[in-house]
Amino acid sequence: MSKTFTAIIEYDSGTKQYVGMVPDVHTAGSSLEEVRKNLKEVLELVLEEAGDEINHQEFLALEMIEVET
Image (cartoon, rainbow, N blue to C red; front, side):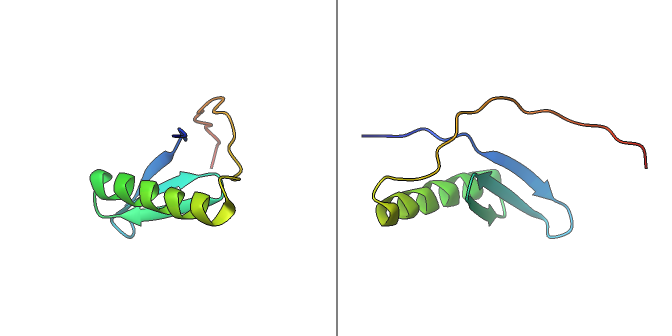
């Protein structure tokens, strides 16, 4: 059985790392390929530990919010 998760991946210019996030799970890597691989590995570990019970939320939207500074 497989599960599909929606991940948010951002680039942190301070650390020069890509940061991947799924609710309750996050990891980093030096490339997009590495962070994708790391996300898959950590999700598999979490599912193994949690007995397939993980906070799996349905993706709704991704929005950019502009604020005055």
